[in-house]
Image (cartoon, rainbow, N blue to C red; front, side, top):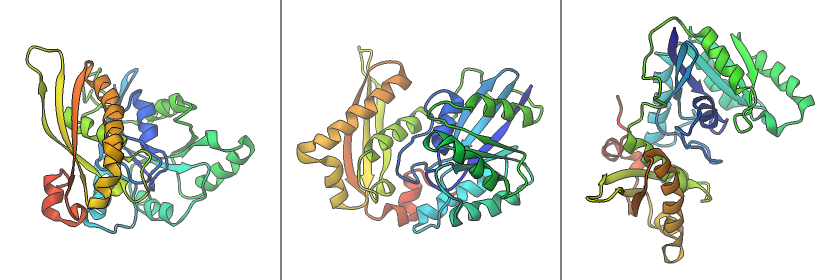
Amino acid sequence: MKSGFVAIVGRPNTGKSTLINALVGQKVAITSHHPNTTRHAIRGIVNGPEFQAVLVDTPGMHKPRTLLGRRLNDVVTDSLESVDIVIMTFPANENTGAGDEHILNIVKNSRVKKIAVVTKIDTVAKETLPVRLMEVGGLTDWTEIIPVSAVKALQVDVLSTLLAKHLPEGPQLYPEDQKSDQTLEKLICEHIREAAIKGVRQELPHSITVTIDEMGKREGKDLTDIHATIHVERDSQRGILLGHKGETLKEIGMTARKDIEAILGGKCFLGLHIKVSKEWQRDPKLLDKLGYSQN
């Protein structure tokens, strides 16, 4: 039996969360076209023949502008300290830039095995892919380099086999049917946040976080009642999420409820309200209260 931890790193919006969902076989990390949608080091669990890989989906590293940004970057560096393999993602449709170099310098200093994954290969012409692979290959001494499309499920199985090849011998770390070590409440919060950030302006996703106020089975019915708060920083942002006569908030609830019911395996009532928590990304006490505490 082989087992171990695998950190997935890369600059924002390079396909890390989509890749981890494809490897696990179900959604355990939220995805969006907006950068920096991942806020926590989410563990997805890949179970294969005689191996178990625990995937850590880190926030995309970036130059921090807020206390939250600094804490997110700390999540990445902490994740690299206790893993067996590091995967670094490079989108096929973009050139290597300063953001990649910053993370690469950290990865280079790691003594663990390093796998370069060139993502989003479905977005480029086949003849351009070898050039990108050669460019990435020259950045450092990689253990493996592999092109992947998580969206189209191209080469995902090959990557899974490579993980099994390079993991150390070890015991099964989680039950075979477990896909993530996130709590149910955390998964629900992430699905609500994903629904909220879809289709909104670029600056708004960084200002959104979600907390569960109350959750439980409704007496006498096969129904779970969930009451949650979407936190934003300004009154204008509250207006954006609320929409005309509350229509946007209603759509957020409908979208999130579908994913939540899939997790629960049954129906739920989802009650949402929006709270303005001013400057929460810069307030240490609010960050702690909202679940972004320093370890």
